[in-house]
Image (cartoon, rainbow, N blue to C red):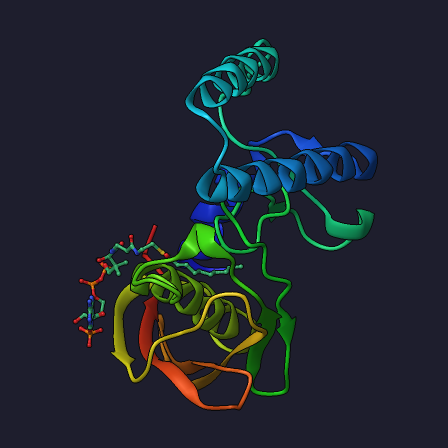
Length: 210
Ligand SMILES: CCCCCCCCCC(=O)SCCNC(=O)CCNC(=O)[C@H](O)C(C)(C)COP(=O)(O)OP(=O)(O)OC[C@H]1O[C@@H](n2cnc3c(N)ncnc32)[C@H](O)[C@@H]1OP(=O)(O)O
């Protein structure tokens, strides 16, 4: 593997891997924290209760921070396959910020079904444009990595065609549109439940030289 492959692989190999049992426990914790985050953005309890819950959460944070790693862990999903970054903000089962998306590879690229709650809201009732950009960046990047050359995003061009709704099943899909040398081009889109395109994206990924 060349360029970004080698640099990223070196960094990944330097990190401690979780076994399946540990990854499952971390993923379950991240799920609970996702529920907590949604509860925070939607709660309507009294001020005293907000303060009391805040104290409890502070205590829980202290328990987790009691033993810290220098960097997030990696793992082999299902106990096999390559080492993966399990706290990626789009796909990471171990990152409460991630929805998380389960991305499947297709003949031409990659796709995922997902639903976003009010944690990801930008304009009222719609998904924040930075969140849809992040999702498209990741899925186009994974399409490029699987079908062409793995690289970092050199450019990402977006067209927001209509608002992306909160709380309904969405689809993101991407395909590789070309590659040469260290460069891979990909295109993709997010579709609403009626199959209408909400955001379109084109991206260039480049494998850095080191
Ligand atoms: C399993 C893996 C899954 C991967 C999923 C990934 C999804 C998420 C990806 C990310 O979010 S990555 C984080 C965001 N991106 C970055 O932080 C990238 C920061 N930028 C860089 O590291 C460098 O600018 C970059 C590696 C992109 C290019 O630096 P280089 O020094 O390697 O490029 P160089 O200057 O040698 O240019 C190489 C070619 O690309 C062209 N190029 C470079 N940047 C470009 C650009 N932005 N747009 C268009 N063309 C560009 C450049 O003109 C040149 O064309 P030629 O070969 O024809 O001469």
